[in-house]
Amino acid sequence: MPRKPPVVFPQEQRLLSELGERLRLARKRRKLSNAVVAQRAGVSRTTVYKVEAGDPGATLGAYIRVLAVLGLEGDLNLLADDDRIGRKLQDLALESPSDASRRKVPSSPAQNREGSV
Image (cartoon, rainbow, N blue to C red; front, side, top):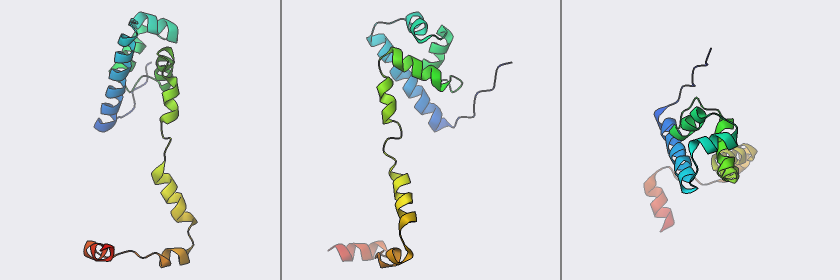
């Protein structure tokens, strides 16, 4: 019995669709058919179609196999590489209460503009 695909919000679906389109274009630039990519990736042609369509039901492993066949697996190292929000949250948690009270935070945008002149 097939599993239900995960719930995906519209913005996430758009990202998956855009990724699938980029993978389809990469395959075409290399003049590879779906059948060749499927064979080299060790997946079915249907799976390659799903990956290129941005189907959320396709496994991450299938996306990685297709990336590898296209020579793009190194791009995975760029995902979540720069976690700015996480580092800011971590830095705030590491601050002592006295450090936070020393920081001067303007109470309004007008004060911010006056202080910077």
